[in-house]
Image (cartoon, rainbow, N blue to C red; front, top):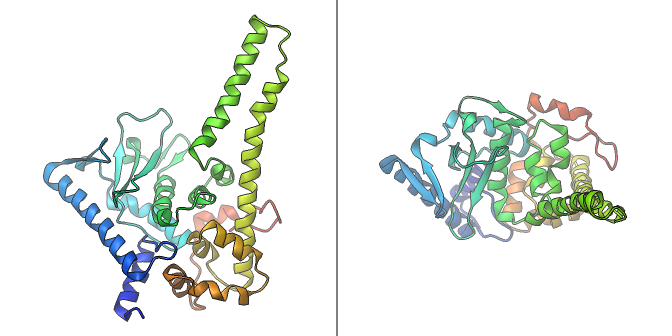
Length: 319
């Protein structure tokens, strides 16, 4: 039995962007949160006293580059609307040096150190938009990754993060590249096709190019198929939760692993869902925060562009 005061703290931590991992006990969860908080406090103290700090051996941060709380709060409005959390604890910094031409931002963490920081391009100090990037979206995207880290989930990780985007295309395609090798296998066949065409044009006119076209198209098609399969799994689960009267299905599924989402999608009636709620601490938090009939659905007017987007597998509106 968890003491009432401790339970209220755990619920508040979930709302603040700290998610219990699968099977994690209350003691282990609180200990991990304390380690993260200590690491973040240590970083802030070093920045305050020395003006700069180096994290993960090679990332140089300065006090002047810290993202102000009011800018981070922009992302909190979006993550609260979508997923029921507002993470103010993750250190964020503007970065202008040594970044790629089209780089917008990223989250950097470590499997050993209990610390994560997110970085966004320096142009966002004074601008909300740059090229096809939106400052609020970039921050919310990375904060979604920060909260879901304990799940160690890959298949739908980018799907949830890209739901913060105002772009329908990015929301649809964002989950295509979910592993490091996806981009490599996407690019290499294209380069081989280019090389084959150059060889055909200048050296071997009879060289057949069509096999290289097959190679160039095969992996993109596979990425689209895999992405659609993952989307179908999510939307089946969301439809079930909505049918059972759960007002914030996105917030519930955001805290689930992919196998759990698949499991929910296969359920025929709500009675099958009930045993999940006692599976571990994480599910008890989900039940307490989002399955209470008095919980009201928070909807951001800026997300109304989703009203006419259709789920590819059923035609149902995507929230």
